Amino acid sequence: MSNRSQFSLEVAQMGKVWVASLSLFGISVIGATQAAAIEAVMEAFKTHALAGDPSDYIRESCEACN
Image 1: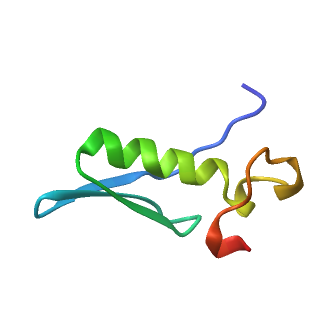
Image 2 (image 1 turned 90 degrees about the vertical axis):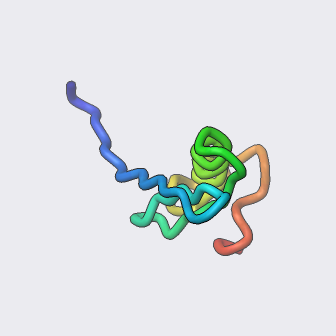
């Protein structure tokens, strides 16, 4: 393996909702289910400016990065 990355994904239940976060990138999302929270945090990561070059995005970068 010559190209490898590791990111810490945290998922926790808070009352009736689930919170998923990638603290290294400052991304946190809330979902109704654990799977929904994980899916949402990965979608947010795809559009986050720290994840790569924002000019390469098909969609706009996240609100916090604008």
